Image (cartoon, rainbow, N blue to C red):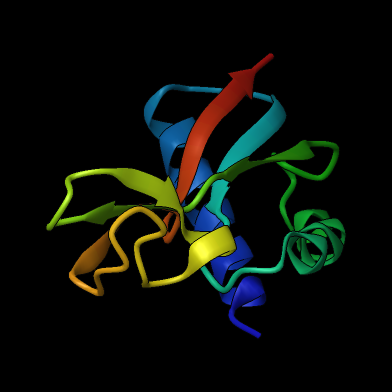
Amino acid sequence: MHELGTIIYVIDTVEKLAVEHELKEVGSITLEVGEVSGIVPAYLEDFWLYARKRSQLLKDTDLKIETLKAVTFCENCENTYSTVDYGKTCPYCKSGSTYLLTGNEYIIKEIEAV
């Protein structure tokens, strides 16, 4: 369960940014989580409810999660397609010469300062 580590990282990062920018309160944090990142959004939400209580700055902060679609690129036919629907094999030309473009990341997209 790397979701707890992810949440701890988010809290540490936001607290450092809050000090740098003299923020007194944070209304919400929006994370973008890739479809095939291996991160389970429901676990993030559960850990967030627990971990935010340990931060005076973030104790009332909401966590918003947006899913980034997993998209794969085919080197043979140069098409893109849904990774979740078709996996590594291109649905257009049946090639296995493909690579993931998006969907494996997690990003702190937005911090709403109040």
